Image (cartoon, rainbow, N blue to C red; front, top):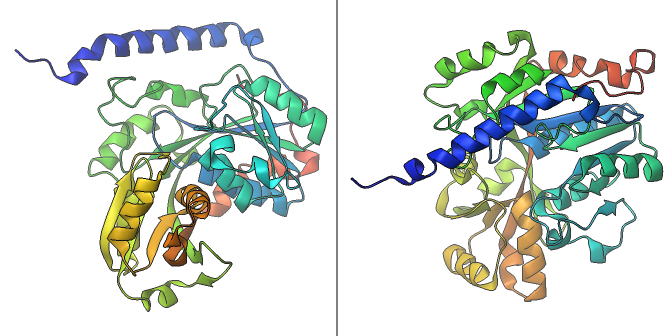
Length: 363
Protein backbone atom coordinates (compact mmCIF):
# COMPACT_ATOMS: atom_id res chain seq x y z
CA UNK A 1 0.00 0.00 0.00
CA UNK A 2 1.36 3.40 -0.99
CA UNK A 3 2.00 5.85 1.82
CA UNK A 4 0.78 9.43 1.59
CA UNK A 5 3.23 12.21 2.37
CA UNK A 6 1.28 13.09 5.53
CA UNK A 7 1.70 9.49 6.75
CA UNK A 8 5.46 9.80 6.36
CA UNK A 9 5.36 13.01 8.39
CA UNK A 10 3.33 11.58 11.28
CA UNK A 11 6.33 10.57 13.37
CA UNK A 12 8.13 13.95 13.00
CA UNK A 13 4.85 15.70 13.83
CA UNK A 14 4.41 13.63 16.99
CA UNK A 15 7.98 14.43 18.02
CA UNK A 16 7.42 18.11 17.36
CA UNK A 17 4.19 18.11 19.41
CA UNK A 18 5.91 16.31 22.29
CA UNK A 19 8.81 18.77 22.18
CA UNK A 20 6.49 21.80 22.29
CA UNK A 21 4.45 20.26 25.13
CA UNK A 22 7.60 19.63 27.15
CA UNK A 23 8.99 23.07 26.40
CA UNK A 24 5.77 24.82 27.44
CA UNK A 25 5.57 22.75 30.60
CA UNK A 26 9.07 23.87 31.58
CA UNK A 27 8.13 27.54 31.13
CA UNK A 28 4.91 27.01 33.11
CA UNK A 29 6.70 25.26 35.99
CA UNK A 30 9.80 27.46 36.03
CA UNK A 31 8.81 31.08 35.30
CA UNK A 32 12.40 32.17 35.95
CA UNK A 33 13.31 30.74 32.53
CA UNK A 34 11.65 33.83 31.06
CA UNK A 35 13.29 37.24 31.25
CA UNK A 36 11.56 40.55 31.93
CA UNK A 37 12.46 43.98 30.61
CA UNK A 38 11.86 47.44 32.02
CA UNK A 39 8.99 48.47 29.71
CA UNK A 40 5.74 46.82 28.58
CA UNK A 41 5.88 44.20 25.82
CA UNK A 42 2.93 43.36 23.57
CA UNK A 43 3.24 40.20 21.49
CA UNK A 44 1.35 39.54 18.23
CA UNK A 45 1.55 35.90 17.20
CA UNK A 46 -0.36 32.86 15.98
CA UNK A 47 -0.74 29.10 16.39
CA UNK A 48 -0.14 28.12 12.76
CA UNK A 49 2.30 28.65 9.95
CA UNK A 50 1.37 30.95 7.09
CA UNK A 51 -0.09 34.41 6.93
CA UNK A 52 -2.67 35.17 9.60
CA UNK A 53 -2.23 38.95 9.60
CA UNK A 54 0.39 39.40 12.32
CA UNK A 55 2.34 42.13 10.55
CA UNK A 56 -0.75 44.18 9.53
CA UNK A 57 -1.88 43.98 13.16
CA UNK A 58 1.53 45.22 14.33
CA UNK A 59 1.18 48.15 11.91
CA UNK A 60 -2.36 48.82 13.15
CA UNK A 61 -1.32 48.85 16.82
CA UNK A 62 1.78 50.94 16.13
CA UNK A 63 -0.30 53.65 14.46
CA UNK A 64 -2.79 53.53 17.34
CA UNK A 65 -0.08 53.96 19.97
CA UNK A 66 1.53 56.74 17.94
CA UNK A 67 -1.77 58.65 18.18
CA UNK A 68 -1.29 58.51 21.94
CA UNK A 69 2.23 59.94 21.63
CA UNK A 70 3.99 56.72 22.57
CA UNK A 71 7.37 55.82 21.10
CA UNK A 72 7.31 52.28 19.70
CA UNK A 73 10.04 49.79 18.84
CA UNK A 74 9.09 46.69 16.86
CA UNK A 75 10.91 43.43 17.58
CA UNK A 76 11.14 41.11 14.58
CA UNK A 77 13.28 38.31 13.23
CA UNK A 78 13.07 39.87 9.78
CA UNK A 79 11.81 36.65 8.20
CA UNK A 80 13.33 35.93 4.78
CA UNK A 81 16.34 38.22 5.10
CA UNK A 82 19.72 37.09 3.86
CA UNK A 83 21.72 37.19 7.09
CA UNK A 84 19.31 36.17 9.85
CA UNK A 85 22.04 36.06 12.50
CA UNK A 86 23.08 39.64 11.77
CA UNK A 87 21.20 41.97 14.18
CA UNK A 88 19.91 45.20 12.67
CA UNK A 89 18.47 48.40 14.08
CA UNK A 90 16.43 50.42 11.58
CA UNK A 91 15.19 53.94 12.31
CA UNK A 92 13.75 56.71 10.16
CA UNK A 93 17.28 58.02 9.50
CA UNK A 94 18.70 54.66 8.35
CA UNK A 95 20.51 54.85 5.03
CA UNK A 96 18.85 53.65 1.85
CA UNK A 97 21.61 51.04 1.33
CA UNK A 98 20.30 49.12 4.34
CA UNK A 99 16.68 49.24 3.23
CA UNK A 100 16.40 46.27 0.90
CA UNK A 101 14.11 43.28 1.26
CA UNK A 102 17.10 40.93 1.09
CA UNK A 103 18.62 42.73 4.09
CA UNK A 104 15.49 43.22 6.21
CA UNK A 105 12.92 40.73 4.95
CA UNK A 106 9.89 41.82 2.95
CA UNK A 107 7.52 42.33 5.88
CA UNK A 108 10.05 44.31 7.93
CA UNK A 109 10.77 46.56 4.95
CA UNK A 110 7.04 47.04 4.37
CA UNK A 111 6.60 48.04 8.03
CA UNK A 112 9.44 50.55 7.77
CA UNK A 113 7.96 52.13 4.65
CA UNK A 114 4.47 52.33 6.14
CA UNK A 115 5.54 53.52 9.61
CA UNK A 116 8.99 55.15 9.31
CA UNK A 117 8.73 56.69 12.79
CA UNK A 118 8.69 53.26 14.42
CA UNK A 119 12.10 51.69 14.98
CA UNK A 120 12.67 48.12 13.84
CA UNK A 121 14.93 45.83 15.84
CA UNK A 122 15.75 42.69 13.84
CA UNK A 123 17.20 39.96 16.01
CA UNK A 124 16.46 36.24 16.30
CA UNK A 125 17.24 36.59 20.01
CA UNK A 126 14.21 38.58 21.14
CA UNK A 127 15.59 39.19 24.64
CA UNK A 128 18.79 40.68 23.26
CA UNK A 129 16.77 42.67 20.74
CA UNK A 130 14.57 44.05 23.52
CA UNK A 131 17.59 45.18 25.55
CA UNK A 132 19.11 46.79 22.44
CA UNK A 133 15.89 48.69 21.77
CA UNK A 134 15.61 49.94 25.36
CA UNK A 135 19.26 50.98 25.60
CA UNK A 136 19.53 52.75 22.24
CA UNK A 137 16.01 54.01 21.59
CA UNK A 138 14.30 54.44 24.99
CA UNK A 139 10.83 53.50 23.67
CA UNK A 140 7.67 53.52 25.77
CA UNK A 141 6.55 50.17 24.45
CA UNK A 142 7.85 47.10 22.61
CA UNK A 143 5.74 45.32 19.97
CA UNK A 144 6.93 41.78 19.21
CA UNK A 145 5.98 40.52 15.75
CA UNK A 146 5.47 36.73 15.56
CA UNK A 147 6.54 35.90 19.09
CA UNK A 148 3.80 33.81 20.72
CA UNK A 149 6.07 30.73 20.83
CA UNK A 150 9.10 32.79 21.91
CA UNK A 151 8.50 32.46 25.64
CA UNK A 152 11.97 33.48 26.82
CA UNK A 153 10.92 37.14 26.67
CA UNK A 154 8.12 37.92 29.09
CA UNK A 155 5.28 40.05 27.83
CA UNK A 156 2.37 42.03 29.28
CA UNK A 157 -0.12 41.14 26.56
CA UNK A 158 -0.47 38.21 24.14
CA UNK A 159 -2.57 38.78 21.01
CA UNK A 160 -3.14 35.73 18.78
CA UNK A 161 -4.18 36.04 15.13
CA UNK A 162 -6.18 33.22 13.51
CA UNK A 163 -6.93 32.89 9.79
CA UNK A 164 -10.73 32.48 9.60
CA UNK A 165 -10.46 31.09 6.07
CA UNK A 166 -7.95 28.32 6.75
CA UNK A 167 -8.35 27.94 10.52
CA UNK A 168 -6.18 25.00 11.66
CA UNK A 169 -6.02 22.93 8.48
CA UNK A 170 -5.83 19.22 9.29
CA UNK A 171 -5.24 19.99 13.00
CA UNK A 172 -1.84 18.29 12.90
CA UNK A 173 1.52 19.57 14.10
CA UNK A 174 4.40 20.58 11.89
CA UNK A 175 5.52 19.20 9.50
CA UNK A 176 2.39 17.09 8.86
CA UNK A 177 0.11 20.09 9.35
CA UNK A 178 0.15 23.82 10.10
CA UNK A 179 0.02 23.78 13.92
CA UNK A 180 2.90 25.24 15.90
CA UNK A 181 1.07 24.59 19.18
CA UNK A 182 -2.19 22.95 20.27
CA UNK A 183 -5.31 25.08 20.64
CA UNK A 184 -4.96 24.81 24.40
CA UNK A 185 -2.10 27.32 24.11
CA UNK A 186 -4.81 29.97 23.69
CA UNK A 187 -5.06 29.91 27.48
CA UNK A 188 -1.93 32.11 27.41
CA UNK A 189 -3.67 34.66 25.16
CA UNK A 190 -5.18 37.93 26.35
CA UNK A 191 -7.14 38.32 23.10
CA UNK A 192 -7.76 36.47 19.84
CA UNK A 193 -8.52 38.09 16.48
CA UNK A 194 -10.22 35.99 13.81
CA UNK A 195 -8.85 37.63 10.69
CA UNK A 196 -10.22 37.37 7.11
CA UNK A 197 -13.65 36.98 8.67
CA UNK A 198 -15.27 38.22 5.45
CA UNK A 199 -14.30 34.95 3.74
CA UNK A 200 -14.45 32.52 6.64
CA UNK A 201 -14.14 28.74 6.39
CA UNK A 202 -17.36 26.71 5.66
CA UNK A 203 -16.94 24.98 9.03
CA UNK A 204 -15.99 28.21 10.78
CA UNK A 205 -18.64 28.17 13.50
CA UNK A 206 -18.15 24.55 14.48
CA UNK A 207 -14.38 25.06 14.61
CA UNK A 208 -14.63 28.20 16.71
CA UNK A 209 -16.31 26.18 19.46
CA UNK A 210 -12.86 24.70 20.10
CA UNK A 211 -11.39 28.19 20.33
CA UNK A 212 -14.00 29.36 22.82
CA UNK A 213 -13.26 26.39 25.07
CA UNK A 214 -9.87 27.95 25.78
CA UNK A 215 -10.59 31.69 25.87
CA UNK A 216 -13.53 33.85 26.89
CA UNK A 217 -15.83 35.03 24.06
CA UNK A 218 -15.35 38.56 25.38
CA UNK A 219 -11.72 38.35 24.33
CA UNK A 220 -12.43 37.19 20.77
CA UNK A 221 -12.74 39.71 17.92
CA UNK A 222 -13.20 39.53 14.15
CA UNK A 223 -11.32 41.48 11.49
CA UNK A 224 -10.89 41.71 7.74
CA UNK A 225 -8.72 43.65 5.31
CA UNK A 226 -9.94 46.72 3.49
CA UNK A 227 -8.30 48.61 0.64
CA UNK A 228 -8.02 52.31 1.35
CA UNK A 229 -6.06 53.32 -1.76
CA UNK A 230 -4.08 52.09 -4.76
CA UNK A 231 -0.67 53.69 -5.19
CA UNK A 232 1.52 53.79 -8.28
CA UNK A 233 4.79 51.91 -7.75
CA UNK A 234 6.87 54.51 -9.60
CA UNK A 235 5.36 57.67 -8.09
CA UNK A 236 3.30 58.97 -5.20
CA UNK A 237 0.10 59.05 -7.24
CA UNK A 238 -2.85 57.28 -5.65
CA UNK A 239 -6.23 56.26 -7.02
CA UNK A 240 -9.50 55.57 -5.29
CA UNK A 241 -11.37 52.38 -6.11
CA UNK A 242 -13.73 54.17 -8.51
CA UNK A 243 -10.78 55.78 -10.29
CA UNK A 244 -8.99 52.43 -10.58
CA UNK A 245 -12.06 50.83 -12.14
CA UNK A 246 -11.93 53.40 -14.94
CA UNK A 247 -8.58 51.96 -16.05
CA UNK A 248 -10.44 48.92 -17.35
CA UNK A 249 -9.55 45.21 -16.94
CA UNK A 250 -6.59 44.51 -14.65
CA UNK A 251 -4.14 41.76 -13.78
CA UNK A 252 -2.93 40.86 -10.30
CA UNK A 253 -0.02 39.01 -8.71
CA UNK A 254 1.02 38.15 -5.17
CA UNK A 255 3.33 35.97 -3.12
CA UNK A 256 1.29 35.31 0.00
CA UNK A 257 0.34 32.35 2.13
CA UNK A 258 -3.15 32.66 0.61
CA UNK A 259 -3.06 34.33 -2.79
CA UNK A 260 -6.66 33.44 -3.63
CA UNK A 261 -7.91 35.53 -0.70
CA UNK A 262 -6.19 38.59 -2.16
CA UNK A 263 -7.61 37.97 -5.65
CA UNK A 264 -11.10 37.28 -4.26
CA UNK A 265 -10.98 40.55 -2.34
CA UNK A 266 -10.14 42.50 -5.49
CA UNK A 267 -12.98 40.84 -7.38
CA UNK A 268 -15.40 41.51 -4.52
CA UNK A 269 -14.69 45.22 -5.01
CA UNK A 270 -15.93 44.97 -8.57
CA UNK A 271 -12.50 44.91 -10.22
CA UNK A 272 -12.25 42.81 -13.37
CA UNK A 273 -9.16 40.59 -13.21
CA UNK A 274 -8.17 39.26 -16.62
CA UNK A 275 -5.31 37.11 -15.28
CA UNK A 276 -3.57 36.42 -12.00
CA UNK A 277 -0.14 35.09 -11.05
CA UNK A 278 0.46 33.29 -7.74
CA UNK A 279 3.83 32.87 -6.07
CA UNK A 280 4.83 31.20 -2.81
CA UNK A 281 4.78 33.18 0.43
CA UNK A 282 7.79 35.54 0.77
CA UNK A 283 8.74 34.78 -2.84
CA UNK A 284 12.02 36.32 -3.99
CA UNK A 285 11.36 37.68 -7.46
CA UNK A 286 13.77 37.03 -10.32
CA UNK A 287 14.15 38.42 -13.82
CA UNK A 288 12.15 35.51 -15.24
CA UNK A 289 9.26 36.52 -12.97
CA UNK A 290 9.35 40.08 -14.32
CA UNK A 291 9.19 38.75 -17.86
CA UNK A 292 6.27 36.51 -16.94
CA UNK A 293 4.38 39.41 -15.39
CA UNK A 294 5.10 41.66 -18.37
CA UNK A 295 3.80 39.00 -20.75
CA UNK A 296 0.72 38.37 -18.63
CA UNK A 297 -0.33 41.98 -18.13
CA UNK A 298 0.74 43.44 -21.48
CA UNK A 299 -0.40 47.06 -21.32
CA UNK A 300 -2.96 46.45 -18.58
CA UNK A 301 -2.43 47.72 -15.02
CA UNK A 302 -0.97 45.14 -12.64
CA UNK A 303 -2.10 45.11 -8.98
CA UNK A 304 0.06 43.64 -6.23
CA UNK A 305 0.48 43.78 -2.45
CA UNK A 306 2.76 46.12 -0.54
CA UNK A 307 4.86 43.14 0.58
CA UNK A 308 5.43 42.03 -3.01
CA UNK A 309 5.85 45.54 -4.35
CA UNK A 310 8.99 46.26 -2.30
CA UNK A 311 10.75 43.32 -4.01
CA UNK A 312 9.33 43.77 -7.51
CA UNK A 313 10.20 47.45 -7.48
CA UNK A 314 13.79 46.88 -6.32
CA UNK A 315 14.37 44.23 -8.99
CA UNK A 316 12.69 46.23 -11.76
CA UNK A 317 14.82 49.29 -10.96
CA UNK A 318 18.03 47.24 -11.04
CA UNK A 319 17.06 45.64 -14.34
CA UNK A 320 15.64 48.89 -15.76
CA UNK A 321 12.44 46.97 -16.46
CA UNK A 322 9.33 48.81 -17.69
CA UNK A 323 6.98 46.87 -15.42
CA UNK A 324 6.94 49.73 -12.90
CA UNK A 325 5.05 51.89 -15.38
CA UNK A 326 1.93 49.79 -14.92
CA UNK A 327 2.39 48.44 -11.38
CA UNK A 328 -0.11 49.50 -8.70
CA UNK A 329 0.10 48.68 -5.00
CA UNK A 330 -3.04 47.75 -3.06
CA UNK A 331 -2.66 49.52 0.28
CA UNK A 332 -4.56 47.55 2.91
CA UNK A 333 -5.55 48.11 6.50
CA UNK A 334 -7.28 46.06 9.17
CA UNK A 335 -10.93 46.66 9.89
CA UNK A 336 -11.85 45.30 13.33
CA UNK A 337 -15.43 44.63 14.35
CA UNK A 338 -16.33 46.16 17.70
CA UNK A 339 -13.17 48.22 17.45
CA UNK A 340 -13.84 50.37 20.51
CA UNK A 341 -14.01 47.29 22.77
CA UNK A 342 -10.89 45.89 21.17
CA UNK A 343 -8.89 49.08 21.70
CA UNK A 344 -10.11 49.33 25.28
CA UNK A 345 -7.95 46.28 26.00
CA UNK A 346 -4.92 48.50 25.47
CA UNK A 347 -6.02 51.31 27.79
CA UNK A 348 -3.41 50.31 30.41
CA UNK A 349 -0.68 51.02 27.87
CA UNK A 350 -1.93 54.42 26.67
CA UNK A 351 -3.04 55.93 29.96
CA UNK A 352 -0.01 56.66 32.19
CA UNK A 353 -1.99 56.38 35.43
CA UNK A 354 -2.99 52.81 34.51
CA UNK A 355 0.23 51.72 32.83
CA UNK A 356 1.53 48.30 33.96
CA UNK A 357 4.48 48.04 36.29
CA UNK A 358 7.83 48.03 34.53
CA UNK A 359 8.12 44.26 34.57
CA UNK A 360 6.55 42.03 31.97
CA UNK A 361 4.35 39.39 33.53
CA UNK A 362 3.58 36.64 31.00
CA UNK A 363 6.13 34.04 29.84
